[in-house]
Image (cartoon, rainbow, N blue to C red):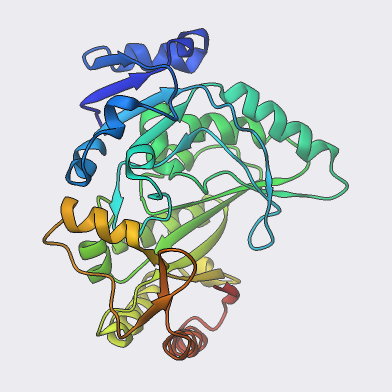
Length: 331
């Protein structure tokens, strides 16, 4: 990604990464802001500007460092070096407020974040796993900042703990030769090719994602797979049956051994529908009244009977075609 415009907090020049980014993007317009979390000139934009704002980068200093307990694939969710993304997945849960989360935000105080990460891991009575990619896609971010390389090289020296992150991108070549010492868990998110094409705009094709997972496995990384989010279009049985068959055919034998799988069903919302209808008027409509029901304020999820049917189908397909794998959870 090469941004059209950069909004930045002036304090970023006090950090090494801030200076690096200043030099890297010196041909781009830089606009000073007071707060990366509140940019008045973007808040006034209409929903149809959503796609255009994906081409902006916001650079600031992260002020929130509170870890959140997690009981799925990690022990803690960790606020880390970025938030948001330049891709445009129509269901993205980060899009709670389009003029805050539509664009990629980078945080330059990575030394401060790493110091807390290392201290927390070292002080624990057991090996903890830290999810550092819940608010962004760090493989994508790495193409701009090299932060993932920087992070792996430093955390891998630690004698305790693991870090993990998911991705929808295949640009893993810079990570393959790193001395990760088995302290990194790389997880690839997958969906059927038709859903990637129609719903996950700007992300890597399925074939490339599978190849990247094989590469990371061969490089000795611990790996995992997310089927996420499960999007139930009219022909969902065919689409997800073909997906699992392609995984069975193209994942390496080594990657399939003891593979851990997470399954997450899509949650949609009124906000998503409002943005997508204006920003992407020709895109597929993800809300289906016959499939969905309300959950919470302005949110939609799949009806219980359909979700149960789809879960049973996925479990059956995985058992038949990826029998060496383990489903960690379904939500």
